[in-house]
Length: 569
Image (tube, rainbow, N blue to C red; front, side, top):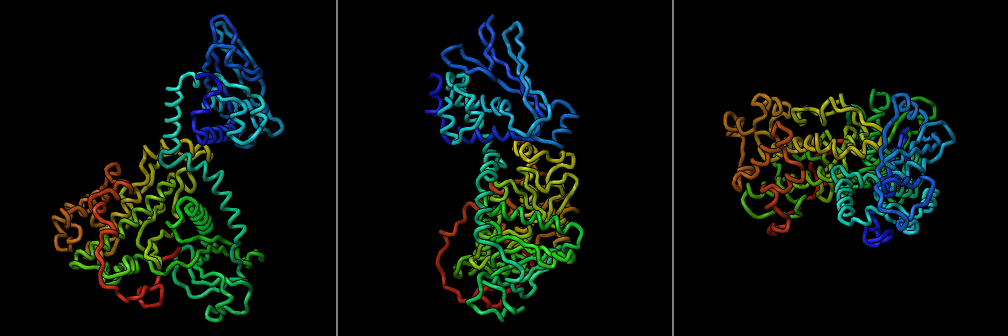
């Protein structure tokens, strides 16, 4: 395959993604030295890649490699203070083995893109692609592209090598927690979301009527509210005419005077927006935020976080009722099921566990660890879907947002025995783009997603075992500690009478899953995806349920009684 034909078989989207990926590297705020070596015929000088145009037919195949490294500590420090103010200088030295070295030396100058670094980064994946094809594929005509007519055709002349590089690049971009997805999110989805929010608008304090308080926490209070079409002279929800209502809301007023509240509010905004882009439906529908007008005086500053109304009851509310899990049967399945009491209860528990694991999996696919999965942080929507709440403790491990190595934000009643998402010795994340590049390695080594799956195991025990459900969560956690986190040993010696019927059905498939989720060794715990494939859940599907008698019990959100909401968005 001759030079320039590479674009005919390389997928166009991969070429575009590769170009964006390596161009981002060139824009990172590092003072780097790029070294390239071109191996040519013995006794002949290699071509000057930075100044001359290279034609495939004019020389033997060339191998170009790049090496990027920070020069020294002083340079690293300076580069963080004044990024992208470096001017490129070229010094070409030819040694006796016909190798040419190109150095990029630091020197403050007018802020500009380092074309040399960008070219050095783009060459390996775009080898053999013509300038016209590259410009057409990437969709831009930059000064960088004007310097390129053709690139050494080593990859185009070795399709096996090219295919292997392409597969490796694709695999790495798609590996958890998703380098490629992060690039698409930051370059495409986030700007589109900002445009959508700008077009739709967010409530202001004078166009919002706040109703009853429905939840309270250390860092904020939660209220029902109405978003009105215009400012109204009323402070009562009941006094708002129906034709003046724009949207029914759930709002959280962050207690800005509390230490750490502002940070948690900012984290919650970030996480809600991220998940709204990557996994809509996993969380309560987030609208936006605003600072109350009281902030103009410099006192009593109030940050308001705003969600669409999507139900008031949490899983914790339903768990506290005496008839759980059958109190959720018609909410989930829209009808009362046939079968024995245990069979009906098992269907409810399986469906709740399945939905919870699907939500956790979606968060993990987006690179986000919740760190506070518990019944009070799980909303039961009017449509019977579970939604994740309270994302102030969450951490984005694609870029390290909200990750502090020696800080543990958790509820000890639901957190795993290791307490930390990653070891305390894990260094603080670097600049976002570098953290993103290293995220698959960190994720594979530390398996941070299994922090949340332990919490799911605790919730499964509460939902399926009446004796555990009646225990205080702290007592259950202490009991497991006393038995070295061995739930099977605890059951055998002290908990035979707590009621294990749901988990013992189908060859104890449920208990096997519970024991794995609560395993004290993180490496032995299943991921959310693996738990969904377990025998306990794999044999269950809504389509297999037999129709029964329609039950007329209304949902709590419709005003028919039932639990009132205690959790917070």
